[in-house]
Image (tube, rainbow, N blue to C red; front, side, top):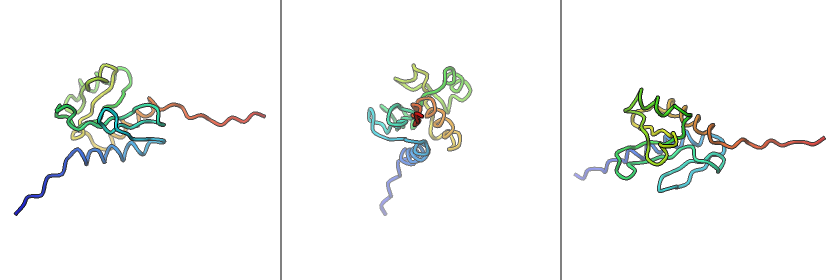
Length: 127
């Protein structure tokens, strides 16, 4: 009897991330540096999904965070949060997908979206 191949756990996590990210207005996804990356209003990155990036063992998202939040999260929950390569020096946080529920993940992603999304232009009527 042949064994069925195990599903890649990263695929289910990517579905979670997509569901949350696409709930944000004017979100688009494209590959950037080989990773599914989500952009606010087509301009700025607010979430990157990484699945064992360079064999680092993390199935995670990388998101921008408010100043000081990275250090606090890593100190209080080091199994959930980490300093990602490249963008960690700019205050971004890495979040382990196996260690966070959808509600908390959605909170972090929506905060990241609000940080980077350009303000929508409002129509102005001249009288």
